[in-house]
Image (cartoon, rainbow, N blue to C red; front, side):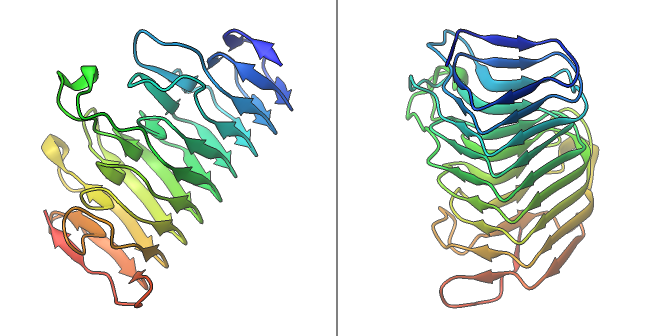
Length: 240
């Protein structure tokens, strides 16, 4: 067990089998976190359980659970870019994964049971905008073979808040919930290029009826073999 925050500064560090009662910051390349639990701590401002906002390359998070021991509107899962997350279990946070850049793979993971507050201090007292995966910008992002549910706002929210998103692949997932489960916004950066959404199954627990995917018609999606369960109705794109 490790009590307190952990700032990893040595390249190639492997964290294996740890119960971390604090936050983890990645400050070196080629770090691996595996077979561990990250519980965080009491927070007074927004903080991710794993922070790779510096974009250190080669980060791998494997067979690890992220679950804050103290429920808080400030608790987030993974922030940053340049990482692979494999078989991670993230729950009890606002945003499970929040991407600020590209070169990311999220695979075989379970993102579920997001926290949601009807009055969230991060949004001026309005409700939380919790997403399973929020993407502000980045190229080469793959979300493959995951189970994603439990977010109030969106399962996948592409915002393009800070830059363009391109080459986004979403395949082999089960996804459910949100206003619409996959929400692709263009904002001032224009159509999202290189979007592939294929071979997924979607639930119908969306606030907008039958809204697995919403996007403007100017964003061209390589769309194939996506179905609602349990009735196997083919998914179409709502026009945003």
